[in-house]
Length: 566
Image (cartoon, rainbow, N blue to C red; front, side, top):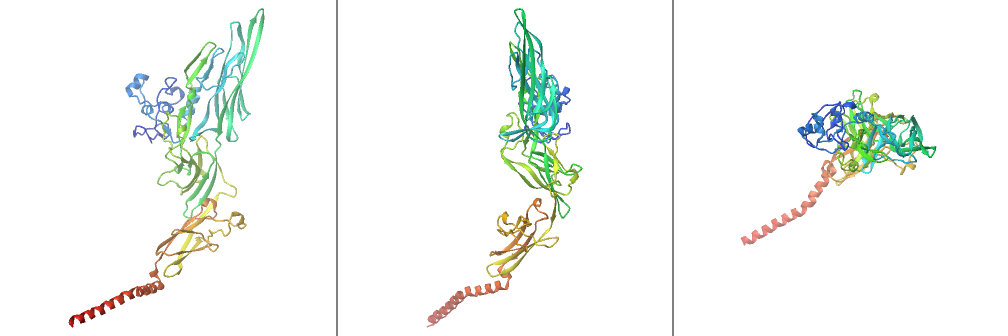
């Protein structure tokens, strides 16, 4: 576990669970009382210390901690009291904690309904405070995209845990004949996914065959029957309610389009596009060549479950919850996309994306992480170059734990050939004041001209079967394109060294594609016979007045000398 950032500026390296994390902060304690150390959850102390990013940071001393909790804390717990802990990859600790904590959730019995503060409750004739509430859905990641949009991405296959409870209204003359939860259902966009029998704590294992936005609905049917003595007769009252809750999610079915290219020196080019946020790329079989995306992660409890209300006929009491679901959160980090290893890793050639505002306002006020504070590029594609790409080992990992992209090669194949280009530059005409430079651009392998100019204006006038090639040549402050012969000409009037450079179009849209090339040429008027002749004429022309003046001065001097002798 590598330390990358700390509010205290403490440079510490710790190792736990084999994950590199940015140490930021937690506090052991919450609105509901003391957070468990995780021993009964299958987590060790160091893992548990990473879970509580939404808890206010309070840097208490070691002595105060031991006095308050009666135990010694680990180094990670000590840092966790003062900092927020973030991860390089989505951790599994949130899911493990949530599954274990869920086991402590129980219904309240016939006369007591237990519910979190955000539960939507229903009252009926004899059933009251009835609700069904989602406890957690895992694996999933709550992703802070910008200031106004946080998307809950869920894995295509996972588990949804819910909680159902209610109470029965009884008066002094009534008694319960029977009651219970008859059926609990999970629906996606109104279509049944799975149903289970009556339970306060239903668990649904789902597998969705398509991605995209979805409304998941948790429904429960609750029934009750009571009898009441009315005079000498027994009256039976039957009641049934259906309670539900909607959960808006995005099913994270990650797919990536992939293109390859081969450079003349043996390097591989690779371009990957995906519509949804992505975590990183692995490009080699040994896993050494990687690209990390912009996203980093922290874990935090769902604060709506901090407290539970116990409602009976005569009172409502709110107590700290013993069951706290924890989620993974993703945010754009200041680190941005980068290749690993830094020196010898893949070269990032180009990044495509959309500019988004900083999601800083959407992050909980007590969470302090290295979120970007200015607009950032939410990338949907990268172009890379690397000498060690293993096409069979390429993996695109998602921001939801355990989800990797299905790689799709587009119709027509994804292979591109990259060739050398040959650029030449020579003086084809000159005079004393200007020179015309001729440019030729050819395929380095076949010698065929490379045509950059589109002689027709607008795509509807392009020749059938003619591929318009992007790219251009710069020389001085001019930008030119070659004609059908692969040639172009420019005229310059200032003496100097002129560099022509070919800027090819992207290999992702050309086959064959080309590497750029550079060539130079020097021009000065004195470098030509015409220039020397012009210089001589100018020298003579400008020298004549001085010669005349010198001659006149000499004659005047002789005249004055003669006067002095007389």
